[in-house]
Length: 235
Image (cartoon, rainbow, N blue to C red; front, side, top):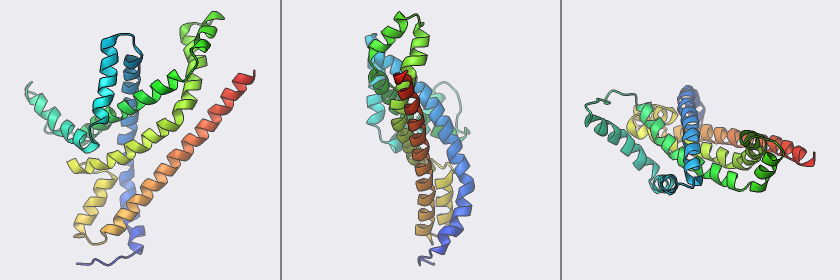
């Protein structure tokens, strides 16, 4: 069995891994969209004056934050089909990607609820009152005054949350999901563990590049929206 390190194998592995990046990105995109929506609902719960809703929102975030990603993944993967059996519903043949999306949606929602809540609470509430007093409707006040400012504040943490989802999503291979990490592990198994280091280096390069692109994209967005905010403040 070959166990020597061959740096050229890194570039050989990359073309085999890259086609599976679209699987990772597709699942991550759905997770981010659904997680942001659920996170917004949780934020409304947390900001609500209703004590029950407030406890639900904060309790959810606490529980998810205290649950390791891989434990949550196994709870969803094994728990949902088991629960469905109690209602005579068979989920054994459901696509593994569904469980991955559910798991990381739950996790991303907890992250986003805190990002949105902290961004919203950082805005001076007097601005809303002033906007309403000059004739704007509550919706217009939120959409034109509060939301743009909260967005600028939330963008860096939103970008960090997306990177975290991509990184945590690498655990999906543990339940047999074949994304870019799953493909890397298949390659290592087929090679009888030969060139495992080279394959993981190739995988790391892809994740590094992806994370840097996301970070750069959100940095540009933040600067763009910040300019708009400064222009609004000076007019």
